[in-house]
Length: 404
Image (cartoon, rainbow, N blue to C red; front, side, top):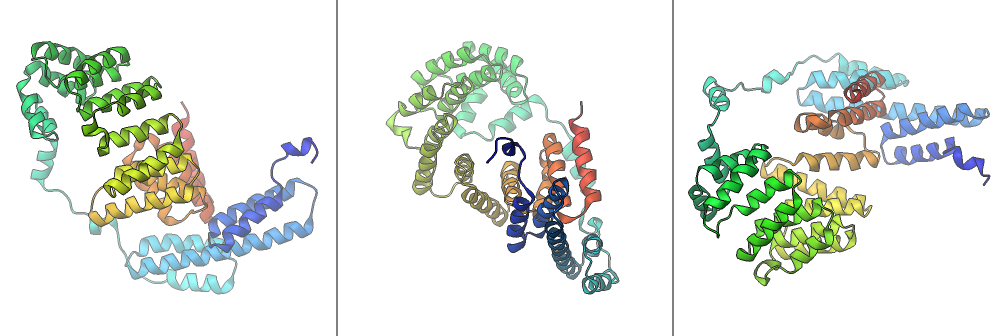
């Protein structure tokens, strides 16, 4: 291969081959994108009429197949009574197809009447519910609510630590780390030496990047409370922030035998391995944890992320899918990060389906800070579906959000 040829990128045949693969597995939107790219690439080089004609035929077939796919989705939506969404799919299919029979079938479905809107499914909250939701808690109530997530023993201790601790603990949990550090430091001095305040103060120091102070008080705390899992958690997070991953591992491996094989400590060990780049060891340890403790959504999610680091995308996708399905079956909220990871891998594998589109639309509400990236992904999905107008709209929205 000549030196200059290295810089020319993929030829049209490479895009064509990828399009053939997607068409074969029924990913017609992805196939359409690849054939369009191949045709564009072919048009830039020396004219090869046979190649261009072949690509145009494949592009037409992929668009017709995509139109038929949209028509099928529309029929399902109409059967469910959602004529509005069905109409969107049918109009899009009409723009894509050049086949007279398909066009006739689409127009027949468009002639069907019906109406279903979101208002039909929305139940407005009562006035009393709105008042309850808008009522702000005072500091004492908020402190009590925060303590409600702790063990009874820890709750009792926290309630005995006085006003400075309460103010500091509330400040810590509302992101006012300077105030938290000052008040918790005062509370540490006001209470007996065996108190449980040090991990909370260390958390404030960690967020203020006062790492050495955090490490010093945690070292003293763990001497008096050697089985405190919370203490080890904050200690590891402080070491991670300083990129002292080996020190985090040493601290975990030297903890008492009473807790070394507990689930939280084993998770800290695996996460420390991951952060240090030892992904194979982390992968083996997460699998060992699942064998020992059974299914745990957090552990499985961390294992899936480790699979991604090892480029085991299909295994990662399967794990994220299982977490999502279990949450749905149990009626629990799905971690937005899990949904995002699942959708990202699906797209990387050429899945531009409505299911993936719906996930990104839901993520806009779940994580508004990342809207620009979700809009960009939606633009790509609409492009794959043949809806250039919506594609450009979402890509423009993404660009506007990223422009200072």
